[in-house]
Image (cartoon, rainbow over all chains, first blue to last red; front, side, top):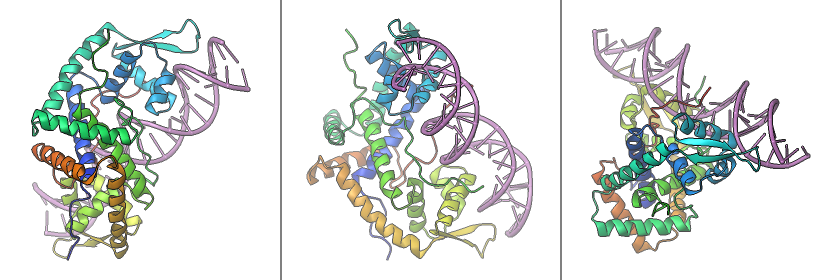
Length: 164
Length: 164
DNA sequence: TATTGTTATACTCTATAACTATA
DNA sequence: TATAGTTATAGAGTATAACAATA
């Protein structure tokens, strides 16, 4: 006979599967605002600590500084973030949101609610709370930083690519 | 004062965050076996229906057939899958696992258990079951196929890349 | 003509390393 | 010499389109 369980492990697989799904749906939604998920994360991080440098972002995101250049370039081109030379140390920039960015973030909040609502349509409010509570405990035990999505750095594929 | 909630929505965000984390940890583990997460998914799909064609995989995975070529090339080079020309319709291949692949899948089962255990260390057995039950209902309502991870096709970035 | 698999090509994402300006 | 940011370059992942063999 074949293997007893076709479906993988259990909650761990469901978590990965649903997480990927949730991320994809979220990407669709914010895409309508002209944003990518990384854009959204960056905006939130800058909003949380205005004036922070690209280096500090690179550290918190776990990516290399040159990556942040491209990321911020995106937001800059969209008119959502401003680079101001620091007057104290003219090597670095102080990153600030524009008024436009603050407007966009208002829309993001609405999008977030709708997203949550659609995603968890199968659960009633009590069940959603229980789910959130369980997930929070898992996230805490796993050492995840609240509010920081680890989807920035690609998980290294330590193997060869396609043939030719 | 600033926005009342720094942390995004709630369970939806936690789901995406934990899902990404779970996937990354799983990638680490199977990497020690010389496999990538796509490898694992493919092996399971072939094991579930030996002899299936690359086209059928492409459909179930939601990727383009040329992508499957590279994916199967990988497994082929590792000696885990065999392409046998179909005798009925010599256009397509029948994909089969090798003995080595079956051995590897045994190890994968052990890895899966350890992964689940580490990931959900914060929860006792009853809580794990409750979590799985909630997640299953969400996954069902969202129309996710049991056992198929949607991480194959990259979610389209419908926006410009880095500057130059 | 339609279908399975393949190759050729191009585009995006991302990291590494070299470079500029400032300290 | 060390640090913030940038540019140049390269590698992996993926899709589109053109192609070969078979039906």
